[in-house]
Amino acid sequence: MKLYEDSRAVMTLDAGGTNFVFGAIRGGKEVVDPVTLPSAGDDLDQSLTNILEGFSQVVVLLGESLDERPVAISFAFPGPADYERGVIGDLGNLPAYRGGVPLGAILEDRFDLPVFINNDGDLFTFGEAIGGYLPWLNRLMEDANSPKRFRNLLGVTLGTGFGGGIVTDGRLHIGDNSAGGEIWCLRNRVMPTTTAEESVSIRGVQRSYAAATGLDPDAAPSPKEIYRIGMSEVEGAEEAARNAWLEFGRALGDALANAVTLIDAPIVIGGGVAGAHELFLPAVVEEMNTGFVSPEGDEIPRMELQAFNVEDDGERLAFCHAEAKELAVPGSDRTVPWDPLKRVGVGITKLGTSRATAVGAYAFALAELDRV
Image 1 (tube, rainbow, N blue to C red):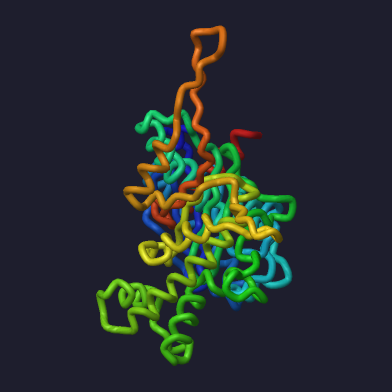
Image 2 (image 1 turned 60 degrees about the vertical axis):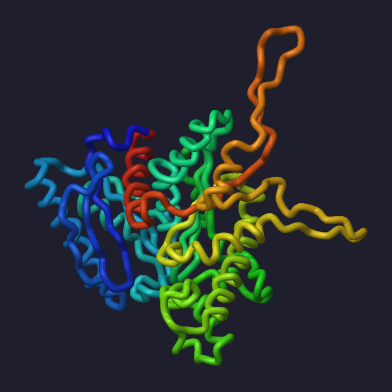
């Protein structure tokens, strides 16, 4: 997809629990100043009024700056939702939407434009697949003269929650129930009676640090502070901080190993907590490369793939070069390139989470329009 050469404009929305931020993208770039209005998440009439007003202002700004009408509206909105039909369900941080709101249809009627709504994890992953992590990874393989190329991507976002998305051969995987990539529902390795999200989240890091230091979880430092403590940048319980991120990494690595066993794709990590990857990413990859034990006591690798931390210089080099070779074809002067190592590279967003999500929303809208 020649994303950055496309002249069509698409209106976007960054939907948060406090504010809605409206914008427009053309040629993969923001082309109007953002419009910010309150989310009014506990008042449905006011919230919908603000959404309509925000997009109306963007239409005016596009006309003033580019003398152009947008071709679509595309954005991420929290779930649960029926994204294909544009129906928003029972949201925790926007309680007024509980019971089902046909937001897509409301916007289509008002602006006479196609409307595409997706999960933020989905659009983050699509943006990184189109213009971020996946092209970066394939350039590494090309520069290493490896025949290996990657077409699929598993993306996860780490923050208040644990989100995910899947891109398969250039297409976003939504699922039959708009529930594809819901990685947060996997079993928690650290606390097996609950979901992975309880450890792979802001509250998970804070809970772990608080338990080790005798603090009330509500009084625990922010993940950023716990990261700084663990990096010896500020005073605090350094061992407890490092162990909190180690526990986070083990729970994340277990979930990723389970997911990638089915998806077979590189993994990109984004979200507000991704900045602490120095303290949790080695544990993620170590956990992914662990094994099971058979009833006879034999070790069984938990994946057919070998995981690499591609943010580490040494592991990235090993990931790229591996065992590529040319196989001679008997009775011919031809050779066939072959790289026998099955591997998965785990790394951090190359666009930034917000940017990747916006690019994903833009690219998804254009791809859907071109399919019609």
